[in-house]
Image (cartoon, rainbow, N blue to C red; front, side, top):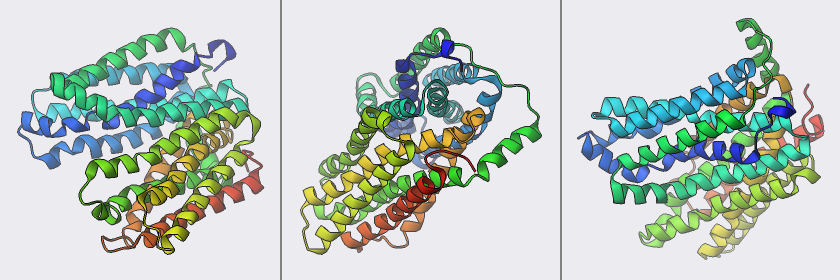
Length: 396
């Protein structure tokens, strides 16, 4: 993307927020959707699980396509598909039609990775880290407020109102993008073999794998927290779901703080330094939690106060790691962004699944902290290795 085609930063922030908002904004409406279509709740849950699968596939496909045809046309097509799909969900008369359009909505997830690619192409390294930090803040805030907003719409106007809102947001951003996203620099036509060669260049880069796996284990630490806390800490709260939800919400709040700090101070440090700071923050917080827990301190404030550093550390890590990955092969920024996102999310899910071997309803808080520390230690080690080997983002 040329300097002349540089979009307003607010446009990229809005695209990133819309990329994640549909994931959970409609969740309060799931029971009502099941009732409306007289469908089994397990079938309705495909609207969540199926969405995640299509989102991962979309990331893998959209990256190379945006590298070949440019960022602008991909964003416009994705927003068009999202808007039409949202209308389709709102007008659906049976479960099959609803699920078809709901899964098609998942295409919008690529707006986040493409926004990162645009930032990398139009900014210096320091500016890129800073902007990615602010974008990550919007990416984190959207799913925090989404369910509340979606629940209000459902209560006032019914479950279809959520999808009407999605259609309006999609159409509005489509119009904004038409005028604000300038024409991108189109790369020369490539054959399938050349694209496979591009994937090979990324997949054989130690720096790519270092940062990608660092993000996977960082996110995996969060997933272990999300799955382990309700199981191990929840019973001690006597069924106070709202209270548990409040304390668990402190970790995403920490992510917002970490992302803000990356945005505020990213111009002063290299991407590798930001990532190492993030991993040290998470490791230090969890180590403190393990020590206090081993000493018999069971206060919820101390427990969740230690876990907040998971969010802060991840908020620092993601912008720096993404900036480093996208710098490995600048001409494959879209491919790298999509591939990294898909691998990191899949890896984190696998890590969370493996953690279930150690975590049960009878496990202690120390066991939970130790499990999270294993994942955090691996991500910290990877951060140090790539920082020493690549000096931030040089490719091998």
